[in-house]
Image 1: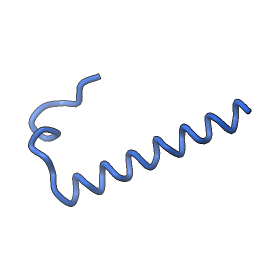
Image 2: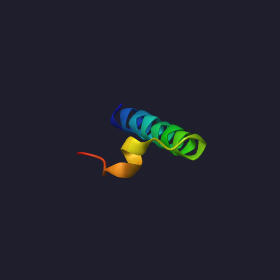
Image 3: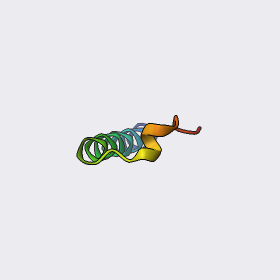
Length: 39
């Protein structure tokens, strides 16, 4: 159960990065480029 949940989290994280990178490549928003991402 632990391994499966961690795998799902990793999968979601991977998809988020892919979508963010594709969006940035398609149309970079001034907000993401102007200031560093807040934590």
